[in-house]
Length: 400
Image 1 (cartoon, rainbow, N blue to C red):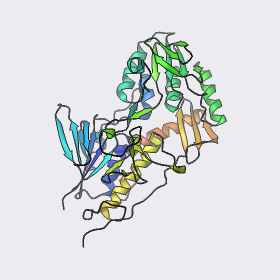
Image 2: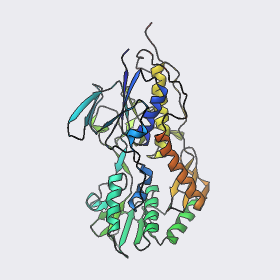
Image 3: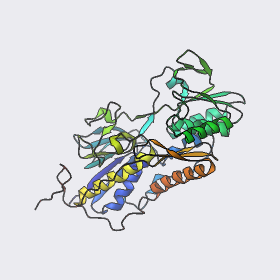
């Protein structure tokens, strides 16, 4: 029997974990697993605000992380996906585009920053959704003199982490946060009070219920026409998925996320699975999972286990995808752990201060450790792949 070809696109948290888990689940002689990524290193996306203020992150070469796993690393940028012909095009460092064929595809190309179409945001604002953007912001912040202004636009988790990290690292700057709603309005009363306390302690000016409608080289303009000085604007108003999926025949949402079932399998193309920010998966309460590492990691587990089960003729597991908490770093020595319901609504309980900061650090280290050790924590004996299963439903049938 020929090897079953599995291609994983993207080596962020979701893609890397999926590839490593598949390598553990399936017998190496039966499958050829290829992990495609544009960069040679794994990027800890949850630490980009730290990188932006000058902190150095330990390099994590993918080649070292996957050494001995049987996973082939393909460095290149995905330029096209043909789900009808089951092929992907990858542009290598030399610029040459090569096509690779698959039997099963895992789409994990993630997301980038979303400028929301606000005039001037693409030209003048900085973003920290990836390493390149964080490094550009790092260079710009380093050139700022005392008293110059920084405005972080967006009051969500990314905005809170960015603004507190900048204010703590550069107390000589005039740092502000502009949020559409009230500060931390999705948090519990205890959580909101702590965020406000930290912002006050760090000297952060907060513009609440403020919509930014334009960005200039030295200011942002709000909906009521007010100009807020901004030598540097940091844009954290949400994420947009990679546009590639929309250009395929895959069923996607209006935002371009691939529609999947409970096992992360595409509803329109059963040879394709999607994980992480690229997928529209439903969680507790039949609510879409939010774009986050907290969603992407269990999605990766579910996809890998479902693929392995279908290929080996075993029962397809279905895990309940739910939330437990939201972890927010508020500088290096402070944090907030907001406990939530299964469908991500804040409850009364919250952990704050240095203990919360340590908790968040353990979460970050644990996520990176899970990527760097993909072969640990699973059964030591991989299963053999049966003859190619029928690709309808979950029942696996093999020819007599």
